[in-house]
Image (cartoon, rainbow, N blue to C red; front, side, top):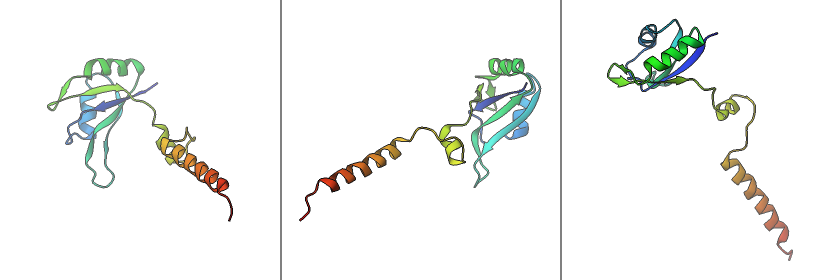
Length: 121
């Protein structure tokens, strides 16, 4: 079973092929993707590498984390699932309300209470 890794602190000029070549030295790379801004196509300075096995992924973390790559020290760790707010944005399972939503709801309740307590003239 393949395992996805987060790779951070990339030089902006690094592309998918560079990433794949670097990680191929420690195992079989299934995919290598540098994440880019949609509007400009410029690298965000991080990416993801999918290694073919769990063992190769662990070896890649041990070998590549802190390793110099084109003048930058790589940050390599196990990739985490997307954040809840991104899932909510795209129709995923709703999470707990944000602080802003909670404050807005409380303000609406406070306004209703103030309106009810005002004497009618």
